[in-house]
Amino acid sequence: VQLQASGGGLVQPGGSLRLSCAASGSIFSLVVMGWYRQAPGKQRELVAAIASGGNTNYADSVKGRFTISRDNAKNTGYLQMNSLKPEDTAVYYCNVHVITGNPPMPYNYWGQGTLVTVSS
Image (tube, rainbow, N blue to C red; front, side):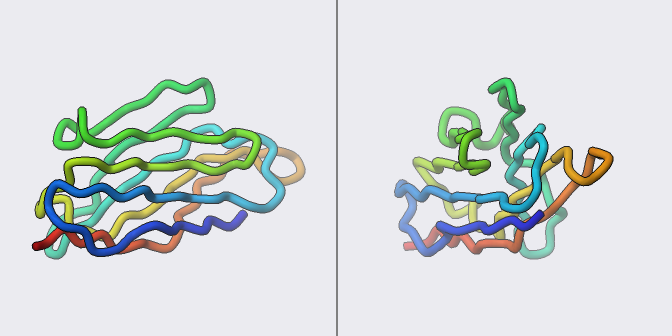
């Protein structure tokens, strides 16, 4: 299973970005897709996650500004980030819990990070 994340970049405060994470490979079920971020000098933290049934979970710091979604047919997840703040600056990582392999077993994968910089 491979993850391809994209969509990071430089944006001014108050702006928006949309991150994408596409999972490829032999995936029986994509159970949970999540986005984490790590700012310089800080620990990696959960930003948002979405389960296969559509249940979502957000960090308090992004509630009302970020929206996580997924396209199950494409095994792709998205993170729409609005009203961005300088403190949102970080490397954002995609993470998935999938059922894969033979016999099918749960695995956890990380994508490469994508840098989001919020600055004027």
